[in-house]
Length: 399
Image 1 (spheres, rainbow, N blue to C red):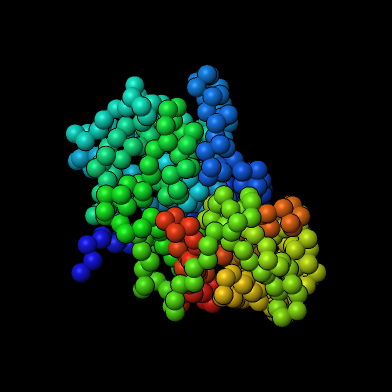
Image 2: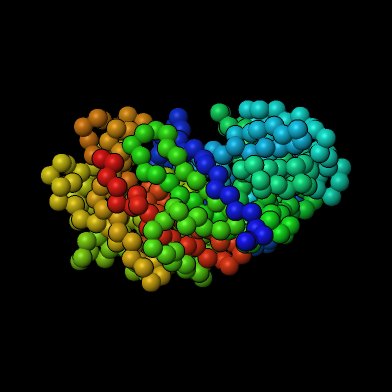
């Protein structure tokens, strides 16, 4: 019997209130990712730390792209803090590493709380939008994954958050650099690994595609959940091409049908914080020519007619040694949710969109939530790799 504790934790996936800005928010996030604002290497943060230390009232330069920069999809997971435990509903973010609470629900120190305002950790700040004090406290995920002395941010001010209590970041430790004035802190996943509770710093994510505004998913810490995928997981190393190599970047070929090559040996990223499937502008134009899609002024997305939809072909993503099919049904926004993006009831909106940049700059695509919900995904920090597998829902029709 394994000595490791492996636990699948359910999370809620929901479309947030400003989904009408879905494309604008995705493009804004893509631009921040492209300019490397949360680069893994510590050099990316040095100049930004000085600004925060010298002027506590200034708006801090962004040192990472966190869940507040995400698209129109939010992921929330229950997390217990303290003893006796208090449950907080936190945004799950693979693009950051801090855990912090105090947005909608106040944190009250318990028997396991230690205030570190004047210690080596010091004050806490993310992106100028979240400011507070660092504590250490007991954090429990899923009932049995326990970190007894987790560094956690306690927000005294948190702008732009509604309906959630904070963020659970599950990215690499580098991404916490710049969030405190004195030192980087270890994320929950790293502490679980170092304490021998988890075999690796890896997370597996699965979804059930849905035409509802609220859908369910599960995240597993430390290992993949074999019940959530079919066949085997195909792992690929993080790309070596910048800036995609700073994130969960992969190399990918992309074609439409059998004859239209959209991207060839291109670097991009897999990102839960992006909602759509974003392509470099030249690749997107080729996709539009192949499908006949035209821009919808109200939403900024592209639409096809019923006849065009009936004639659409699959997209094929070749990542590593595997090719993953994205059927026409997966390429359109769920029709029952057209109103959430400010669309018309009888229109067919594509979830493939223009990133706004040409190919060849090291970030040619972002496979966002619409891609992730069709496949089982493993984000493996320990081995610097991404894993993908098909599920029984990969080809499910929701339109």
